[in-house]
Length: 320
Image (cartoon, rainbow, N blue to C red; front, side, top):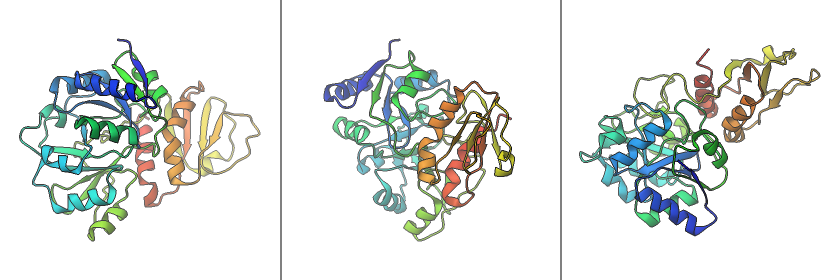
């Protein structure tokens, strides 16, 4: 398959992306989190192509992206009022609501589960495409299963070129990490995947505690032990282990400053959580190409605002 490169700067090419989706094809589309691999969520055969292209297990559920809050009732039932409170506060944006699925929703989208994840993306290109077409699309990250999520169109082409119909280039993604998933099917509500929206923010918005368990067994996107991985093995280390950096077979991604007198392969990560998250996948992908035996990543700060970063790093190193 020849994967088309489409530019979001050209309306005719956005229209071409919409036509491909309507024809049951896969198109990688930018979101404010990462690039998503989109298919018409009402077309089971199109959605099956997502699993084939990614090598993703069929029982691993997908997130449905909508362009209007009113579409919630097309996909979910028994929607609590709190869902609309959160939508008002955080949509469009990087928050996925886990709800009870409507009976007519194909199990291909939900991985056979009775729940469904729904969000409204904030990236202007994706939002406009959804609103102008009236379509809802299933869209996991546009990468091979368990590999690094792409934050640029070129990263998508490098990993899925030849397996999907097109990539719509809308520039680099703003956040760089996947959306927060919050389970609203029962109380107390809880976060099932850490992301840009924290438990503290959700708790403040709802006026009740939203928990954020470190580990759980609920099947949601991203909840597998090994995930978000480059090809090179990743190891998390403390700052004390980076005092003497001399091994040229190791790539070092450090948070604390140090003098690189040994001329080893190293890069300092940003100091703020937003900037760190923005470049995390891109930097791991870059270090993956340095030809080293391992990538050592210094643990960033441990406070709650960094929980999504720690979640991704822990899963990236779980192949040790």
